[in-house]
Image (cartoon, rainbow, N blue to C red; front, side):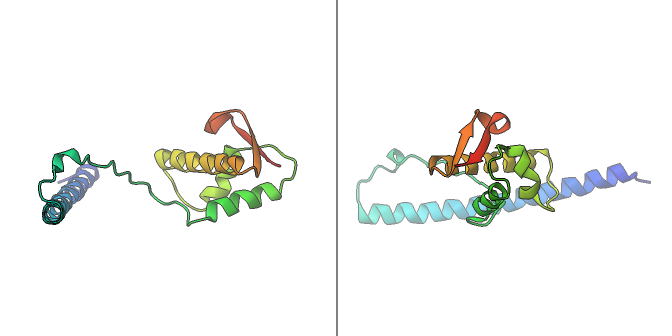
Length: 141
């Protein structure tokens, strides 16, 4: 007799183990790909010191919005409220829409919205007062 909690934990364990197995396969393929690139470099540039080529940091950033969609959403939001000073939190309900986000993803979207507003400020479209995603306020110029 297993409780629902035990069954859920077994399912979670199986899921994580499956992800680990997949990552091992991807790691093996990446090692093969790296060996091929290194072999090509040695052919094209004999005597190359491959250890001097520093690994590049790879960042995974989930795309919450299609290209340009967030900027359009923000500009539409600001145009509907001429003269008002808007906080990042004011735009969040429109930005999230019907998505069901956990706390971490909500914060990520909040930062993405804030950064989009800052970029609009650098382009001279909005003016910013205050600093940080929580304290900053924006208005259309």
